[in-house]
Image (cartoon, rainbow, N blue to C red; front, side):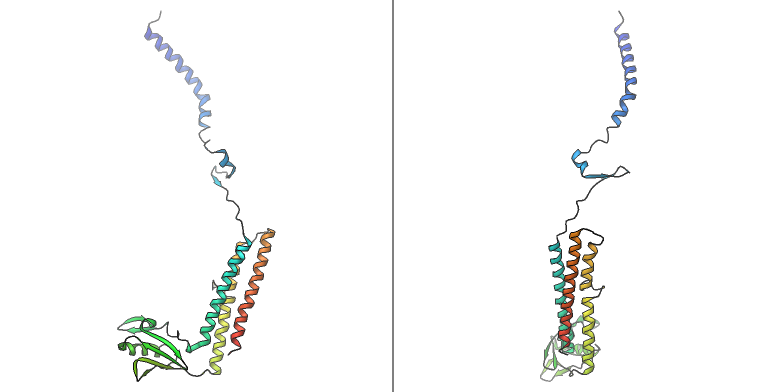
Length: 247
């Protein structure tokens, strides 16, 4: 009988040689399985690329024609409202109480917004400017005189905080200037590409989204957008024609 230590040594040698003969054939199979970690259901929603990266495919965007048209009409309506608001301001011309709102009043080397120093109202053929602080009247007068508006404020003898600004009657020349301003305003809100709120800009924004789409439903939607744009383009022109007749 072999000693126990000799038997153990021989046994280990036999086992070791068998393991070495098995490993080469088993190892490739083990290593080839290390990337199999994806769920089968998820793989159906993925798209493979040649560089072994995988991305989830995005579901096609569903377009709701009614919602799109409502959004466009809402924006067109706001454009017409802004156009009409500007028409009213232009028509008032120098009689607009907001005419001084953009001016700055120079006080002790500091510039103050005109509305923070005085309030302007309209009465007949005059603008009435109420200065909040009587010590600032001279600065307000200076601001109006240097504005380039060709207006001459006069201090009310009964109220040193009140300025009266006489307005000249409209002339053929001023009417011509007003008409020109109204035409420019119409173009700004109707056709201008630089104005993101113009009818043309809004139309272009939405049509760009559907460019190249050949689906029948999208083609129909594009035709509807064009129709709505034409309707509002006519409406904004009517706003202009209406005020033109009053000049």
